[in-house]
Length: 284
Ligand code: C2E
Ligand code: MG
Ligand code: MG
Ligand code: MG
Image 1 (cartoon, helix red, strand yellow):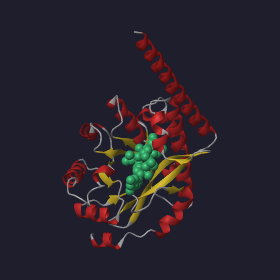
Image 2 (cartoon, rainbow, N blue to C red):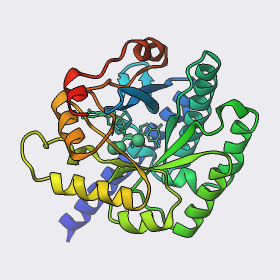
Image 3 (cartoon, helix red, strand yellow):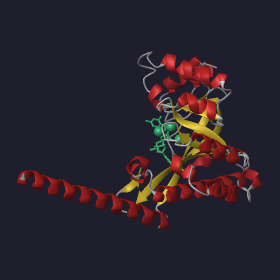
Image 4 (cartoon, helix red, strand yellow):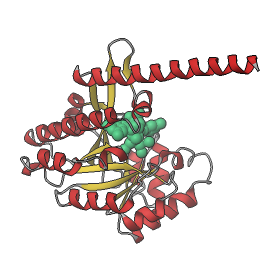
């Protein structure tokens, strides 16, 4: 009995420690936002078939004073369902749109995708905040795309759909990210005003090794066509991935074979010099 009690106390202390750790992490992130420690990297999206650059995706990183440049996997999970996550989301949206305006003024007119957490999209004032950023910038109308995770819990699908409709009126389009990994893919296709499907990289990774994922890739492509949606393959890591995808009928791609996410300052030069591999030209 006593042992049980001890264990209980022990568990309690560990729990408390964990909570304190979590709380500290959140506070460190909050501070990081106010100290401008977060940065956006940009990863190009291309049309493998035409060889054109078709846009970019903004991806957040944390330039941590001690730990270096941290990927989102090291801080976004802690922020799930926490208001500081929405704060960071607002920072991302504001900064990505400023960058888009800047590029547009410099003559680089390409669509920009921004990842949005489900709780941010559904937070009070989301549409108002977005319109406050977009309405003064008519030149970038139609260039903002929001990516929402297929796996994210969109609790109230009709509310989400309404929010998306309101955003559409601002010229914003929507992509369903990591498509095929969630459990609601098909009902989302039916219920949400989407423009693009992003096929998750897990379906692309092994296509040059075995044929297991080919029927899935073909099926998703047919689905996209049936719903009149655009479709892009994520995680195109090698030239050969691209060849396979072209042979399946995919045209749009994103991945290390094209470019890794890069700082904003590198984007302009990258666009000037990018050439698709010769093997992609041959598979047109
Ligand atoms: P995602 O939106 O699906 O973005 C693609 C992720 O795959 C990025 O990781 C990107 O760097 C990585 N990637 C791109 N090409 C390749 C490739 O060829 N091979 C491999 N192995 N990986 C590739 P990252 O930047 O670490 O972001 C991870 C996830 O974090 C994103 O997945 C997105 O869900 C989330 N995220 C990133 N930035 C933001 C943001 O600003 N806001 C929100 N809410 N989520 C974000
Ligand atoms: Mg994304
Ligand atoms: Mg994705
Ligand atoms: Mg992902």
